Length: 316
Ligand SMILES: C[S@@+](CC[C@H](N)C(=O)[O-])C[C@H]1O[C@@H](n2cnc3c(N)ncnc32)[C@H](O)[C@@H]1O
Image 1 (cartoon, rainbow, N blue to C red):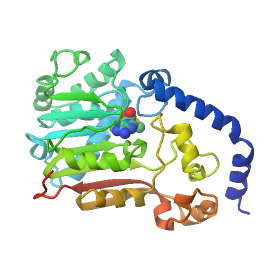
Image 2: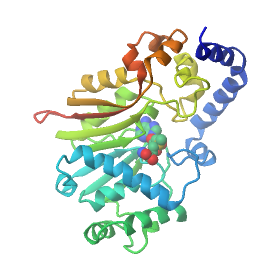
Image 3: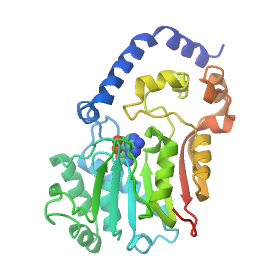
Image 4: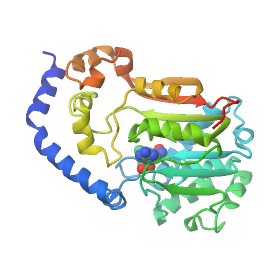
């Protein structure tokens, strides 16, 4: 038996029971009181490492630059966003990417989340101020025009320019209303992926595009092997985590299939991280049923960019 497999077996035969019972109990609490659960667990959407406002601002700039590189091949993001309505799924605890989209010409940004994450605390307002300070004069003027008080980001945004909506389903429920949909580190948390892709297709205007970065890693829920979180049977995983926004564990095959089934065209799926095939094969026999039989290449993907377009002639 390989080291990976032996260590994994020990973990899942002995150490799991307390963890399972705790996870099931807290999942019930999260289901009844989602807002409270998000608050007491201190979720920001960016993990639990302490961060300075400058570091958080740098993270949002990286997110925006990644979108820019994929959306505007010629680098002219202002022309690309001019007059556009953008829908962001799962912004986290502050609208950092939304601010940068508005700074670069978007007409409106709508953020939708399953959990009430947004919090314009003094700390988060300091991040927004930091983002503002890093902009050139034209971009800063665009953002100031979107703020309730141009001198105080803590007062929030004018809702006709930046709207934040929380829906228990996580769905926008928009129809033929937006030109671009983006998300980062969100789709792997979505509890009903077919519903979310159907929502995106409906929300987009014909010809509209979507662009997502998906993190298929364990988010700290593995023990000895990066894929050992795929061992838990689907029913048990749902019992432990369905209400918490914990990764849904779906692999890239599922994303590819759902995007195509939802009607998108020009689909592009590109790996961001991969596991070596020897490590995939070391754990495969222990994986739960939906994962065990996947092609090695699909199991190896630990993250991806996913893009698609609603056909120009599409009716809603
Ligand atoms: C890991 S955080 C990422 C936050 C942000 N995009 C970032 O990069 O910092 C995941 C986000 O997705 C949200 N989320 C979870 N399930 C969702 C769903 N079904 N629909 C929309 N958003 C969801 C979470 O509440 C959270 O805001």
